[in-house]
Length: 369
Ligand SMILES: *[C@@H]1O[C@H](CO)[C@@H](O)[C@H](O)[C@H]1NC(C)=O
Ligand SMILES: *[C@@H]1O[C@H](CO)[C@@H](O)[C@H](O)[C@H]1NC(C)=O
Ligand SMILES: *[C@@H]1O[C@H](CO)[C@@H](O)[C@H](O)[C@H]1NC(C)=O
Ligand SMILES: *[C@@H]1O[C@H](CO)[C@@H](O)[C@H](O)[C@H]1NC(C)=O
Image (cartoon, rainbow, N blue to C red):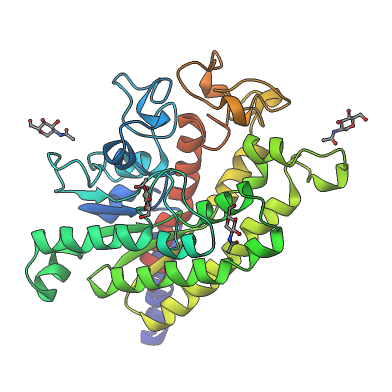
């Protein structure tokens, strides 16, 4: 009888555990009680660093930010980005850019800079590559982060305490290293050869972040760049076998998959090396694919899935000589487009991706250990 009672109790306990780790817990970051978010990355996440670094970029002018009530914020979209939706979901204020010295940094900081690369810009220069907009590569952003930490805590123990409930997002980063190489005419093989260096650079930064006290880190992969109007235009071909079922370019998506594969492998290594830290893969690739697959259900215009909203010309409403800016037309309803300017996504696409990612990540934030 006692054994029977114990067995039942055990089953109930297991059931409760299973439930708590699955559907019973609403999928929201707010339940994870983060008090800060730290973001490193590029234009997918920049909420204003680049335009403070350089006020003359396209991103500091309308139509960027057109769907927000304020003037452009430096976000490379018509409105909000995924990081904004993560912050909102965690019930935290939107992340301020590091370079805005006046802004509150009590709930984390955004170090991402549009145009940033994973590889140090000095190294890219030796390969005859460079960013078109910034030298603030990932190592540079890391040094910003460390100098920020030195202002909020005095020693390792204090920093660990301070960062115990912080969420760190390292990426997406590395996409620009490949984008710039592609735009400068490098071959696919040359670009594939860059991947191990890019991924190791990201790994080293994650290690640093963990050594400073991060307990939960998301490392996002790359988006299917073969679906971007920019590359669809540059690599447009009559060879129908070059395209997949979504009419995206297979070779370019394969490059993103190759990078993502290595990121996932490095995450496994990092988990083995840091068993007490939760390190998760941010599956931006499949979040994007999900939008493509469900586009019409989500309210996107089937005929515009590969067209840039802000842009003009060609089959993809995109022209390298006439990219999105003050003089370039904007589609009447940005919400029915996935691509905002040929490279970056609309607020609506970012919103759906963020929600897909929250559903994917929140359950793992507690249960992975
Ligand atoms: C910070 O505040 C100063 C003084 O009020 C102001 O001149 C400056 O423009 C502000 N900087 C930013 C980035 O908002
Ligand atoms: C770098 O680019 C310049 C100008 O395009 C070219 O002249 C030079 O040979 C290149 N160097 C290397 C190492 O590829
Ligand atoms: C980046 O660094 C290079 C070399 O030091 C410099 O020439 C260039 O102006 C810098 N670019 C930006 C955007 O700061
Ligand atoms: C595709 O074929 C058409 C008709 O033969 C030709 O006009 C066009 O330039 C080709 N496009 C590309 C990208 O090769």
